[in-house]
Image (cartoon, rainbow, N blue to C red):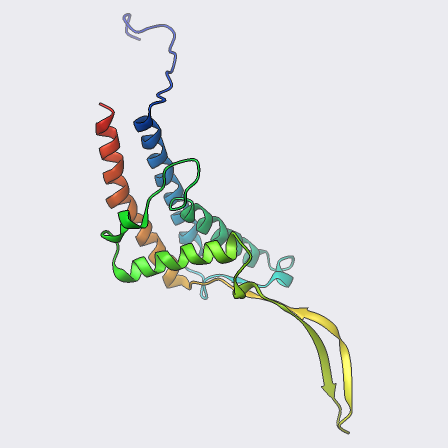
Length: 187
């Protein structure tokens, strides 16, 4: 310890706009990297992620994969949606992503908005069924009332691998640029 160093360190809160924006950019980077780690975990599944609500209790791997997808999707989405912190706009990533990557980005945001965060997507629809059978003599028999419902994760393994590349492209390009500009504006 240097004899000129203070004995007690007191952190100071930097509460000006640029410091908050810099913090927000770092949180966006953290969220994108966490989303990438979620997509990495499910990217090698043969069919991506599937969801059959009636199998959640017995199919622990399936439910964990679905939870991993939902977590990654939410963390990715919140980097682009308004809240208490700044967010990345679509315009900021347009130049950095190829057209197919941008389409995949839009699809994930849309699916997360309409399926994961809010229940308004037909992928979630189930139905009540009446089981009916016809015997050898042509008589109809009702077997009971039940329900059917299932969901399939919207992207296959290649889609999840593509999201990992999208995140890396966003972090290395537009986000680091924004971070760098904010870091220089505070000096």
